[in-house]
Image (cartoon, rainbow, N blue to C red; front, side):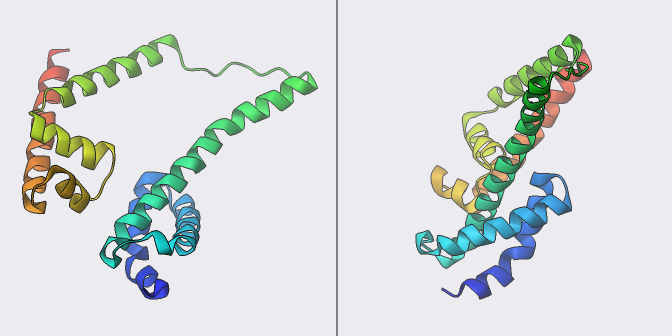
Length: 170
């Protein structure tokens, strides 16, 4: 396995995925570099060259999530330092109404996914929630890639219809 060749072949596609996951190009670039470094260090753990792109993308997603967790904790660290200095901050927590709305939306989405037929729900959860590659989802479900794509398409259509109906009645 030639890491350089694999990296050149797949880095652009993984970068585009990371832009969506990280939310901006700058973070995606940093995450891609970190992911490439981790992939290089752990290349011996890659079992098949054909799995390099999804493997690198998964590493990238994990690095991005870690970055987001650090960013989420940064205000807490700043707050602790400010409290130690005796400085007070104005509260900027979400209103109870915003929190209730977010919780209600989570419940609606949870019910929508639960309403899917079992095969569609499994495909949707593995592909969209766990973010596995299409090939991995098909393998786990013991079906062809085309069948997985068909189930995923039906699941998305079903969810759109269910959510349209639910939100229209609200």
